[in-house]
Image 1: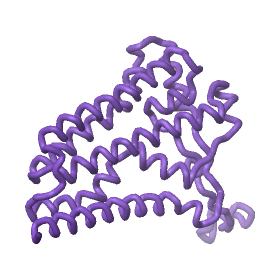
Image 2: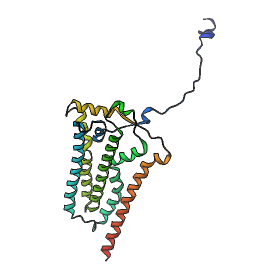
Image 3: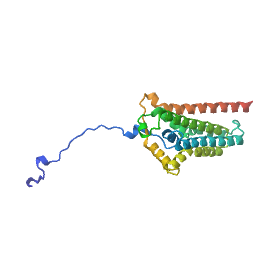
Image 4: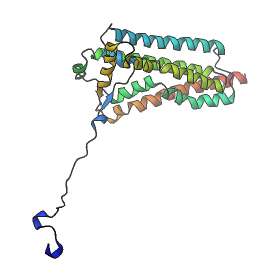
Length: 247
């Protein structure tokens, strides 16, 4: 203890340096399926209860979209012209919002650019075949595209700004039907067997697509291309409306 040093030379703490490589977490390499009926269609056996229930929800959703569209179309007489300046300006700014609100269509764009099918999924669910993956993908795309077209038409024929937002709220409610249906299945209200299918959806993820920079940016390309097409139709209708007023 003399000299005030409590450590021998061999016992002194030594400062060492370590190098490490930072690796991206695994969660960034895979993407979850998404908790909706399209994922149930992917993992469930064809013509099984879960599969048929998911198909029923898809067609119910499309039918409700159609009925709502007919009602709003009949109320407005389907007239694209004669809107006030305030309504036209609001329509212009709501176009990209209308595209971004289509969750199913946005999910399709994102998956085209970022994920791919993996044969290892069959080990978790033998019914999750490539053809079922394509079927769920096409149904999701059809749902999103149909919803966008209907949303855009209603956007253009609506006469008042308040009604624009009310229509958006109504369509937003219908867009969530497939998510609500999955929640009903996942919580076991339709039986344990169907609940187990929902658990499979949560266990499966898709690998990230490793492509060139263009492939990985396809989601942005598709989003802005869709917005551009809608803006082009909007400008055409606006010019035609101005021409009819001046003639």
